[in-house]
Image (cartoon, rainbow, N blue to C red):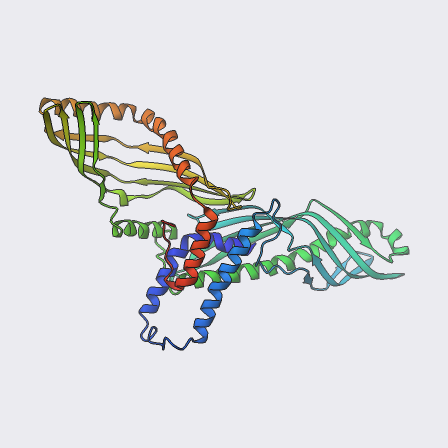
Length: 452
């Protein structure tokens, strides 16, 4: 369970954190001066860790191809889990339970997982069809005593956990709080050798499952908190290294700021639009030397969240840009006559809400579930066509602004269909395996390749 939470929290940090770790290593004097021919223990451990991650990923992919995936490969859930001896005072009698073990914890199903990237919070729900608790008991009163083995069966056990991360004053990301609760729908019990006490203390016996569960619950929650907190912090340390995050803005907005720099570094802002040439009979239109500025001004409009339900991962993103401007050269031909001019346009903002999903069975293709656009005021200036320039500017500046909501509604479905066509060509399983192989080969130099 907690590995899944760590994985979801790590999605937004992986590409960013691995590169940061490498930069930190490059700045340490002598860090790269080791003899290449002598593999140190640290090198061996890194390679072993990379291979282990790849092998575990392969096992997880195969696991979720099942119709009813139970448990999760590589998750070290103790089964059976040993529970400390418990003592309960029952008024006229005392109940001692010893050598108690809980069975069936590894047979869990993932009910829901919801990750809020803005608030760095993950909520997870895990369900067990049945959990068996076995041990020995001693029930003693002032006039009689009984002892023997007991079994308590808890049915439809539900574990709910909420983990929240926070940036400390020194800039390190760490676990802030963890809240957990365990409930069950039904229970049954069998206390052997009760004899006379079974009749006298029938009410006590009937409430025994609750007594056992109430006694176990604090220990189970404490143990889960310790394991979960340690595992999350361990994975954060591996991903982030000694990288410090600003505590003036959220880590999500900080990551988006880094993504803006990446877009500019990759040459997408300003963006050169491929030349367009269309000819219909004697009429021709050519648009060339078109550049668009402001693509990298994107920011988070609403929340960004991910979740797992019914063995399907869903992601919802709300992003927008600030002002987007563009300019280009146009040429219109009618037979032997041609006109050449320039066009400039400004869009106040562009906003999009995107919802996509992917089955955990990676043989299936991703799906786009929601796509909504919103565009701000549009302004266009045109020159080169004489009096027609004013007509064109009037038509373009007035009609799109009056009808832009209808225009956005009209283009959403065609764009959604086009995106789905692209999604249908993606082999998710093969892409994940290629990324795993890339991680094995490059280690800390690993970087995400969108072409994969």
